[in-house]
Length: 257
Ligand code: OOG
Ligand code: MG
Image 1 (cartoon, rainbow, N blue to C red):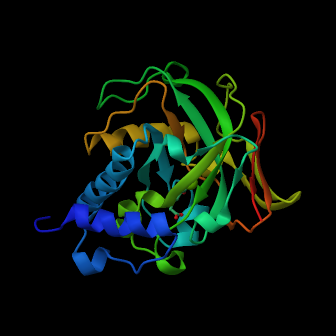
Image 2 (cartoon, helix red, strand yellow):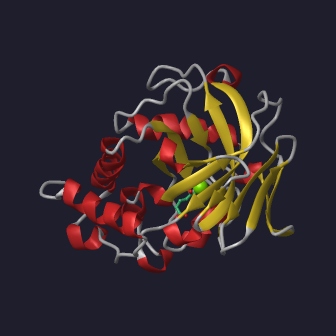
Image 3 (tube, protein in one colour):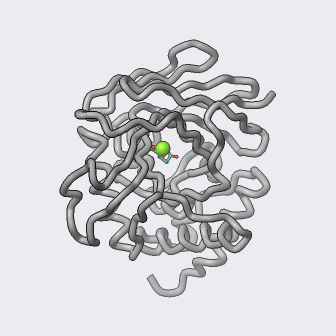
């Protein structure tokens, strides 16, 4: 799309994140289509790289019906992860640093040897070195956590922070593991990894394909978040959050009060 000032739009989204201040949706106002929105996302993440952050992986979004229904957007999307977004497992985040933070249970992959662009993942166990339970903290920069497809893409798919639990070798099956999200010891969401495109391994194929369209190639050593299996829940001050994935274990984080 000609005439969109991607750097300027990225600056508005970046300022919203830096100051934890919601902004109105902007895709309709500036005329963003999906490819241009990915251009804004690239510029938004470049701001982070310019201040010394490192790209450490990729995340998928809206790979489950529960998530699509929650936000009213029904396309699979992808975003970029930087080292500054990583919170140690069991570590804490300051909810005041975000606009309206939500947490969701995820499955993380540690990437190993990826196929050539355009090739499907032949052998998952070659492409992925290890898997882990994870928690993603999402924080839409748009008011009321409401957005269109190009809006959420431009906003780096609401990416804000993530914690990864202990890595395990890739188990025989990943396609039907129970998933729980707990807050202060109470189960608040229940799901299955089957909710993630039928099998979270498919999320990697989609990630390689969709990111490849924008010239982004996944790298060995990167983290890959396959997308939440359940809806996200608001992160309240003082909350202790755990994501439990059957066979993989637990990831946790705490919100300071
Ligand atoms: C968009 C990001 C979705 C997921 O796991 O589905 C996402 C949002 O819900 O704000 O990270
Ligand atoms: Mg997510």
